[in-house]
Image (cartoon, rainbow, N blue to C red; front, side, top):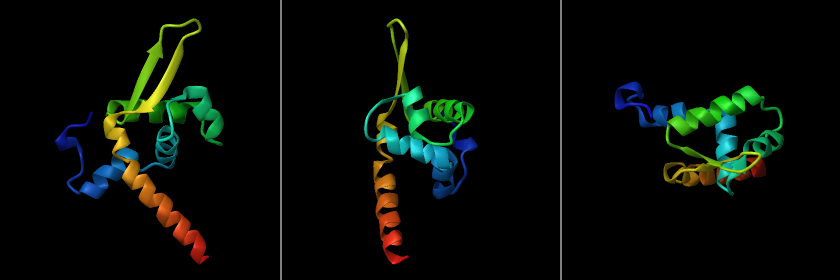
Length: 107
């Protein structure tokens, strides 16, 4: 997790630095519905590379937004889910959904 000194002074810039990439927002959108496995996310997010997905998940895990659970099975199963902090982003994504739908209605 980043320290206060590593984050921008502006709260909006802080939010953008944590979730502002196209792929992070789409990953969060998916994780708001249920926990996902890596390959499920990769298949659902058309065009994302394995490296970008891995880097995005790791970054969000380090920032406390995503949890990674490894199940002791053969073969091993790993699931990604939103943490409590990640769940708090629901309001932001809901607002983006509402705004996007309203915009589509104007064009």
